Length: 275
Image 1 (tube, helix red, strand yellow):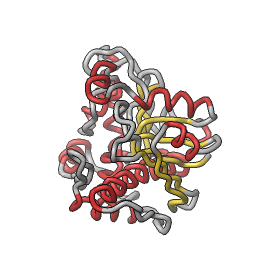
Image 2 (cartoon, one colour):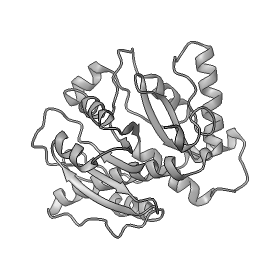
Image 3 (tube, helix red, strand yellow):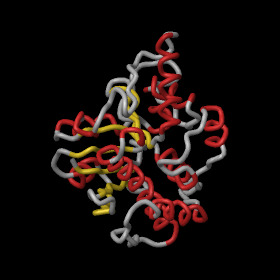
Image 4 (tube, one colour):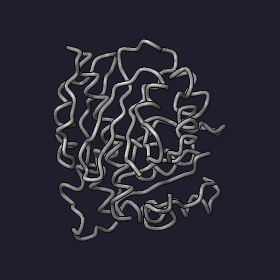
């Protein structure tokens, strides 16, 4: 399977928004193999290409009728991972709808496996692993939580149509620390539009790197929480995060707070061939 990430411009009401969606593919050797900027859903689908691929998208792909937030967001809250609470009403109010739902259905019909991802979480995990690489002594969960709370990714996404220029280079440097980026594009646009393009590529590249990690990494280095119907979110993980997720998911299931099965890498999801 190929590893692909998508940054999806979520606002369904703005056909000519200055920001563009981006599709990034990461090759088996963990290098960026291609980057395509897109406007329409059909362009995104064409850029992804034929299946099979694991496609991770930084947008909601399921909007069940729930109160407050979806089951996966309950789990993320207990992992200290901020996430936009997804309900149909909130998506209509903020974005005019959930553009990713129909896109995910089309990609699934094309033979792809599709899930959501959170670029900030991926960047935080890259930062975490710079100080806690695989093989480092395990931390107890209290120590892990305290240290995890201190990890903050660079702020680089646009606010009011303008990108956080100061955060673009640190964010791109994090991506380049774990991937060969010779194919990183130079925007054909200038000024703030170029910065918007750069932010979009960073988000798509982090999603693609997580897809590669899910397909080729160890089972204790990624997690998949939720279901296609309730929302399925991929996480860059470590053993401590998986232990913490397992404890909290089991507790919330027993208390009737959530209704999704425990789906944590190295446990219920299993190796890449289980897709």
